[in-house]
Length: 183
Image 1 (cartoon, rainbow, N blue to C red):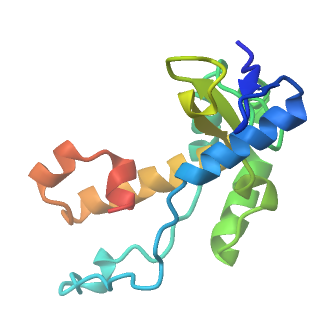
Image 2: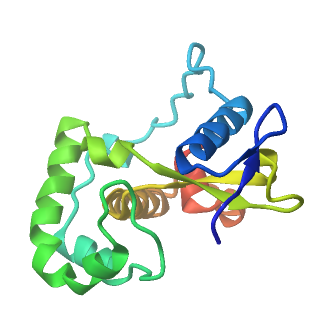
Image 3: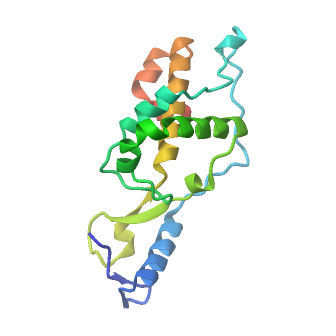
C-alpha cells in the first residue's frame, strides 16, 4: 500500500512524491541514532592457545555462494542495485563463480562495492493516522548480494567458533550468529 498523503509541520496535506520523501527523510533523521565510534573498547586477549584458534582469513567457495544464491527468498525486495532475489536465484549456477571471485576480492581488499553501501529506505506504516509521518518506520532495502556475502561470512565465523570451542554453549544458544558477530 502506498504511503500518504501526509501532513507537513504546518498541517498542510502533501501528496507530491518528492515532498512526501522530504517529510519522511526529516522524520527518519529525527529519530536516527548515530553510534559513538570515538571510544570503542579493545577486546580482551582470548587467544592464549595456538594461533590456529584465530580466524585470519575467510575463504569463500563457489559451493557456499551457489547454495546461498539458490536459497534466496524470491518474495524479498531488491536493493539499490536492482538485482532481485528471484533473478539471482534463477541464475545462481551461472553466476556463482564470478560472484565468488567478487566476494573473495572484497575480503582481500577490505572493501565492498558502492552499491552494497547504498539502501533504498521505504516507509512502512505502523498504526494510527496514515497522514502522520511518525506513524511509519523506515526499512532499508539493501543489496541481495551483500546479504549473501554477509551470510557466507557469518557461517564461516560460526563454524570457526564452534570448531575451536570459543563460545560458551550457554552463550551461543541464546544469541543468533548475527548477534555473535556484532557482540
